[in-house]
Image (cartoon, rainbow, N blue to C red):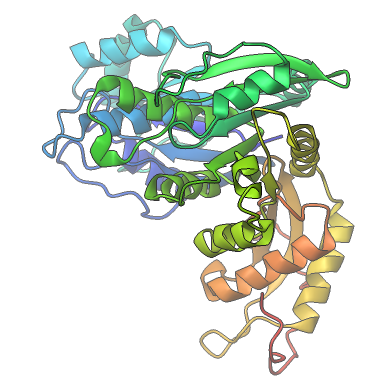
Length: 462
């Protein structure tokens, strides 16, 4: 299963970032008395009672931003809300129930998601009595905590783990889901809607030569060879300077939402046009979400008339998206359907790769071999150690390495380990998320890399 997410939400200045840092155990989010400091989401992986989940810090709901970034902040908050399996609604016990608290509560009550009400700043027993007032928000009894004075952290962790989806709920939802859900994204007028109409063999989407015809993300369910799929047609994206209306702004927001909900993303290019800044920004967003991706060069029939080789376009894509070298490239003609079905079969293969699991013994054997072949570089006259490896999630395949010090492993060495995993596992064309966590006292003492190795071998990095 994908790792569950717990999003911290609430009005400004109730201590959301303080609680985030408190749960994480170190200062990652900026904490300030000035409302509106948090704008982007911050995400961190946590473990409690053998459950892994991601904690997400979001901006304050209802903030009037001094830099007039209200729309952008709200978009990030909505991402955090929609992507969460559990919402942690933080309120301020010292301020009591405010009008904005009630507004946030009404918004959360409309969602089909569990909400954990948390009353922060209960710095002593006398403040806990005031937390009873929040029962009027209609979200149950509040868990009283104080991030500042380290009060009742165990209660909060217990509330989180109790409200995360159970394994039976996850299995049931996985059984009911379609075979694959894929999003088609790209800039305006690259042929996304025409491509879907060809797949479903009907005029399901409005197709027009006028750029920007599709203004919302539309799900289209269909079958191919007896397998049910859902195609998501998204609005064409524009450069930031060209986004002048609410329709354009929310069109971009909905396209991003579709990417988050998709199992596989098809990034579509117009073969007759150069790659733009819009597409580079879009692919960065996809890469940051670890989404399986296929680069789809559409309208290839136009290039065939000029006898342009596919390798030239493939090299052009690799030069522009060097960090996504594992993503396959397909050349199609959406209007006639040429290579479309073959490309969709490849998308199914990526979907299966993203849901693959590897046994812990095999994974540890691979990592141990990689460490023996090319040990990690010395850090402060010591060689960092890896104790064991385990897969803790799918979509994306998430590999956790318990180690002596995560900060001692440079980016080049992490890329080396990712390269070894790609070569050794069935995840060759999908993103792999590698998480390094500091070993706890309860973890095994066995070390995968032999500490007596004196010097790293030359080369071997990827």
